[in-house]
Image (tube, rainbow, N blue to C red):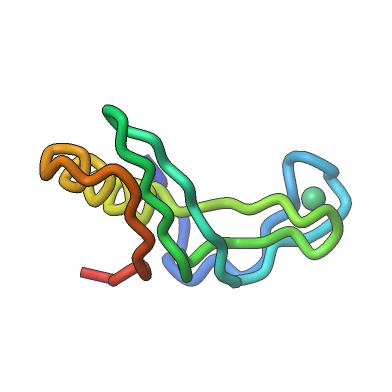
Length: 86
Ligand SMILES: [Zn+2]
């Protein structure tokens, strides 16, 4: 639902502290799904330079969620993986 927003949106004001601007960075996402704990490293995110709040793109979040659900279905209890852009 980001119609009209340019793909390469440069700096966006942080909605948490309203002071900092977010910059492209990486974060680690931890998800729990059906008894599985999935840790995904190197997830692309926008990180606030002031308070450190991380904003993960909706399409990225969907991939991360799908990966966690696939692991849960496979019976994985704990998994640590790197984010892979599909
Ligand atoms: Zn902030």
